[in-house]
Amino acid sequence: MKLSRILSLALVLGMVGLAFARPAAKPAESPVQSTAPKEVNQQWLIEGEKRYRANCGRCHQAPHNFSPRVMAMAVRHMRVRAMLTDDDMKYVLYYMTH
Image 1 (cartoon, rainbow, N blue to C red):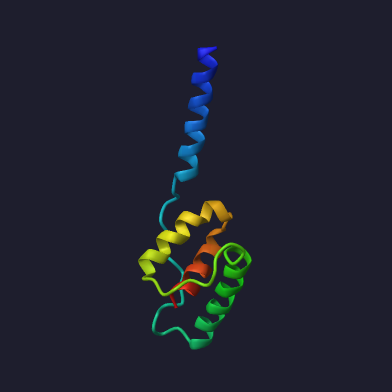
Image 2: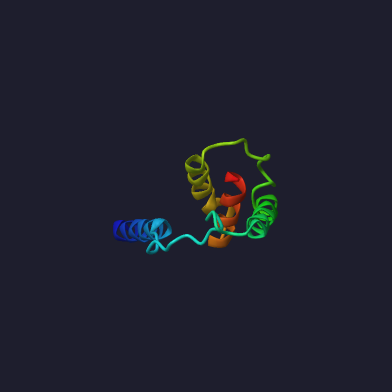
């Protein structure tokens, strides 16, 4: 009986470890560059707002102005809970910081 508990605990810890494992960092594809046309920025804002309303707006009101660092931390923490994809996370973060 103790062996089954130990194996169960090891399985749970392994799953938790996989949930928090990060893939290798890639350069972010964001229209933040000053040379990007305004229409690209506007498209990102529109798409970010759509995804915010669909994923975050069910539980949260529109965010106040926080620094991009604070918003990035909040989005990362809520990513698992709201089941956000990488694209969702990028668009929502862009929307919340611009």
